Image 1 (cartoon, rainbow, N blue to C red):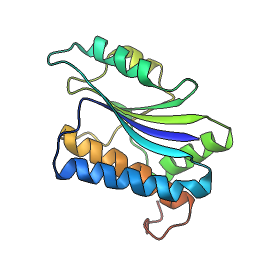
Image 2 (cartoon, one colour):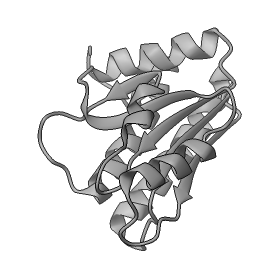
Image 3 (cartoon, rainbow, N blue to C red):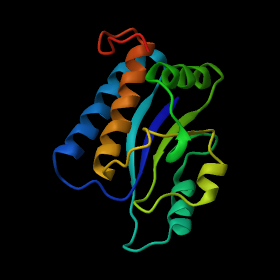
Length: 158
């Protein structure tokens, strides 16, 4: 199975990008024991001022065929990390070839992204800086894999 973090936009050099890369690398290493063959971060270049519909179309076209899509959106469900890990595991056990966690463009997703998603998630009702959402998504992927491998990284019950 392949697990990818798809980011609409480019990661600019800085501490946030280093954190994203570190969590992706950790997730890839830890995920091997679960049969996760690759964990990656894919950036979709967007021109300035692109409309949400066009950005959504570009992002959806970049998702691997047959992948389960997790769309991050302020209207999504607010679930625990444990629930997130269990959902990833369920799809893995069902033989999903890939899971793609999608971080939208700054102006948000157009309707087709949410409508075609297997899961729409929110990191809460607060507004987060885009750079931090990238880090939070990468960390949650790593944390979910840590839960599934019984790693001591995740110390909580939920």
